[in-house]
Image (tube, rainbow, N blue to C red; front, side):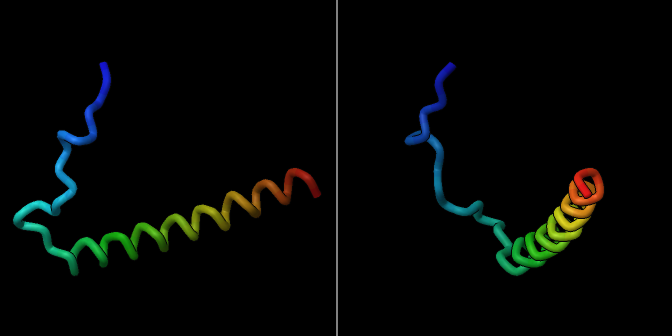
Length: 48
């Protein structure tokens, strides 16, 4: 089944709270950074 992108709106929802989304995104980026550092450390330990 194909997805028709032209049928999907690119506009934000009416109740979109930009500040809330930015704060949530910042939290997720921080968590991803921590996880990336852990993964990097694990790989380096395996090949040291």
